[in-house]
Amino acid sequence: MSTPRLDPVLLDPTRLTIVALLAGTQWAEFSFVRDAAQVSDSVLSKRISGLADGGYVEVRKGYVGKRPRTWINLSAAGRAALSAHVAALQEIATRAEQSPSTSSDGAPGPDPVVVPEAMT
Amino acid sequence: MSSSPTPEEARQALHDVDRRREQSARAAGHSRWAWIAAGVVTAAYGVLADREPRFLSNWSSIIVVALLLIVVAGNTRRGGALLGRPVRARTAADPASMLWVALVLILFIAAATLAVALHTPHAAVWIGLAGGVLLAAAGPWWQRRVLSRAAGR
Image 1 (spheres, each protein chain N blue to C red):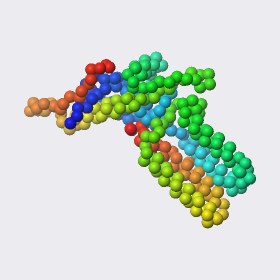
Image 2 (cartoon, each protein chain N blue to C red):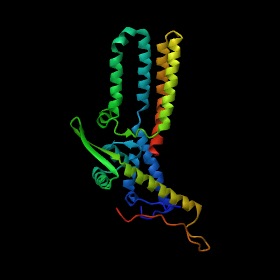
Image 3 (cartoon, rainbow over the protein chains, first blue to last red):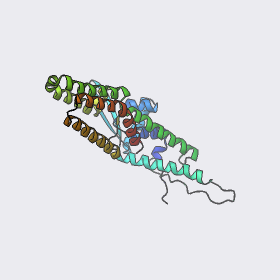
Image 4 (tube, helix red, strand yellow):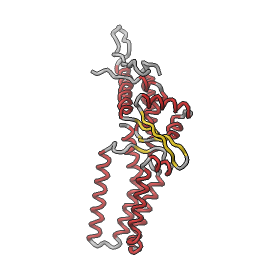
């Protein structure tokens, strides 16, 4: 059985929220993500920059009339990372339901879920 | 969340992911009123075709092009922003839903063609009304289904 891999970048709840919000959409407006995630402009900017640097999201800036707008889109890599991360979370939740982490007779618990070192 | 989330934290994170996906799916959709308006326009087009064929022969191309432009513009970043849609659904995510739409369209066109071929009185009115009711009633349901499935991928 392959070991599920948690994505260290998505362990941050705000980043996970942003990526989950973008999962079923294309080119969401910055203001929508900010309001939906209930974070400030600066917090969202910082998180989006980090995600863009890691290749998780794409960012486009432009104008509608005279008003500047920013649009964000989940990249293919970001989508794959979210899928893998969700699978790993499901694995953790399922394993816990199937077998307790430490049995009364001292038998070893389930294999731990791998968290890669990079990008923490 | 820690680097090794507990089962409870994992469940909480999964719940949050589902909630956020549903949240964006809801925001990406057109409102029920938009579907009802589309249904009314379709029904009105059918009534116009029956009552004012002359008017429609002059204006039908312009009306259809204008409606198509609105639809296409609504699916671009800037057009969506202008029309007050901050987020657009990820399309091409659900081929099964597209197949269903194609099937319904084919059946609808076949029924319309049959009605015209049989010289049904006021066929354009009935076709317009049927199309309008289909859009207004089934549109929001279909949209919810497509968006939920797209968000889950």
